[in-house]
Image 1 (cartoon, one colour):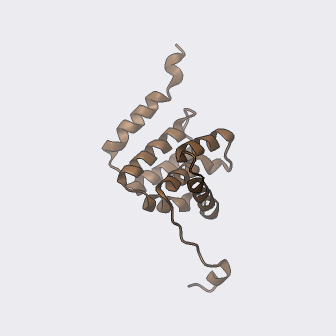
Image 2 (cartoon, helix red, strand yellow):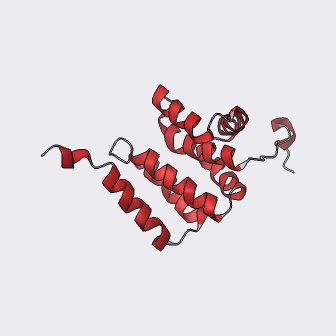
Image 3 (cartoon, helix red, strand yellow):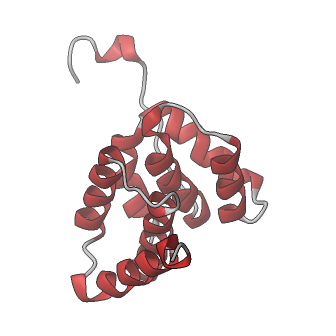
Length: 140
């Protein structure tokens, strides 16, 4: 323990349910701009399917740790199928407006690395989301 660690107080352990981990991961992708708009809050509520405990657990963890420090805790809370489903949701969230911002891309790259999901499993998800969010086909 460092000399100044006592002043910072004891660090609280992070324990997340899988739903809270999903919501927390979504917050890390949505939150780099510093705020959550009504649409983003609606997406978060939809992800937890009304589980206010999971939402609150994610929100408190997000506020306490910040986006980049949440990634290992999200990873630890999820098994492999949950990580794949979380990644699919994160990709969909990041591409919902048709543009992936640099901050979103950086966070997603960290999840890809940390989740350790083979590219062969991720590529079809990315292809599907790209098709789903390509509204240019309707503008012809």
